[in-house]
Amino acid sequence: MPIYEFRCESAHEYERSVPISARDEAQDCPDCGAPSRRRISTPRLSRLGSGAGKLLDATARSAHEPAVVDRVPGARPAATRTTTDPRHARLPRP
Ligand SMILES: [Zn+2]
Image (cartoon, rainbow, N blue to C red):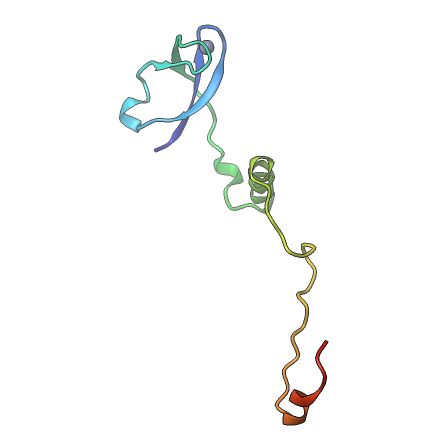
């Protein structure tokens, strides 16, 4: 369902996911319960697919759900050495 912007009589603004068939129906304001009308807003089509748009979306998303990382972003993961020499298996391990 698309997300529409609504504004009530008391000027509370909010976004709500509403079926397209119900987009013009009055919604109840979550703050005061007054009926709200849909606002006309611009879609973010120009930002879709652009690097700046992805960065803005990631920034907005991380404001509410910070990403958990196990190393510094951009750092190379620790190299895992592999060897086929059987003598290496007898070496002391830390
Ligand atoms: Zn309201």
